[in-house]
Image 1 (cartoon, rainbow, N blue to C red):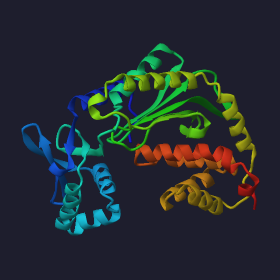
Image 2 (image 1 turned 120 degrees about the vertical axis):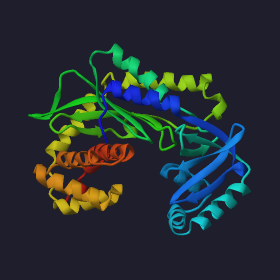
Image 3 (image 1 turned 180 degrees about the horizontal axis):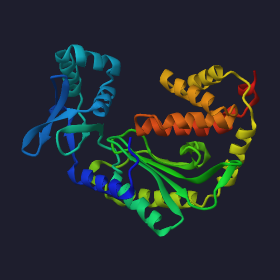
Image 4 (image 1 turned 30 degrees about the horizontal axis):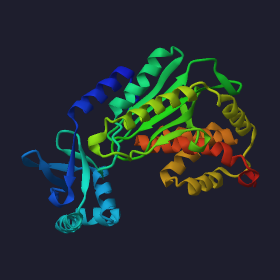
Length: 341
């Protein structure tokens, strides 16, 4: 993933906004077909019919809606494509419902969603965020990542740095996350940026984040006052969180973590958090390697090993999840039961 500068981010979002198209389609008029290992969905588009390649996200959502276990669906798609097509088409045509088909405007179906999916796209997201950035000279866009599933921005306050320990400065800010394809909520959370190694720590939802599920009015009503009020509320929440009122509280928690040694063996403690937070074997190996390389056998050292591993994530969603796990370790790992030998 590439950290984009602001002009590049705006340009890419505008380009995608101009290209993408949405369709509200009755499932009985859809047809799934697979050719050369690629699966397509054919739908009415104006006076004709058009086929779109089902990407991974759309295939997952289609299987989920039809109650077909995804591992089974993917297996027969690869091994018995005719059976895959027949199974999905049979189930599609039994339903009498409309679904929102989101496309990239070219040849790809990027999402298969409810007709009540509330469209809160990246262009409107930026229209809510950019004025806040432009009007406050103390704000800095630290990170900007854009993929076919998510947009994530990390904004920091450019005020005096605080130190967890001498020589370990951090900045306070917010992390913003949005998905246009139904993979998570519009969200806002406190964010800590560690200058020593450019790690990001996301404070968990229960500690002050805002989330809005993309469910509400039907597609035809996406520009109504209800949607406008959501963006207004989101902008206000960003401004409130950027006052930094919670920075002292978070700093106290980080300093306590830095002062709390871990007496368990690295392999044991990493395996424990791996089970608790569903880290893959590869992620556990990265965390363990970072933990041992940093030679900081404290709770703070372990947290930074997790957030360092987040930088190696292949998706924005997983990067954010690992940063959140780092944040969750602040209150949860600082307990005698976890630290005990």
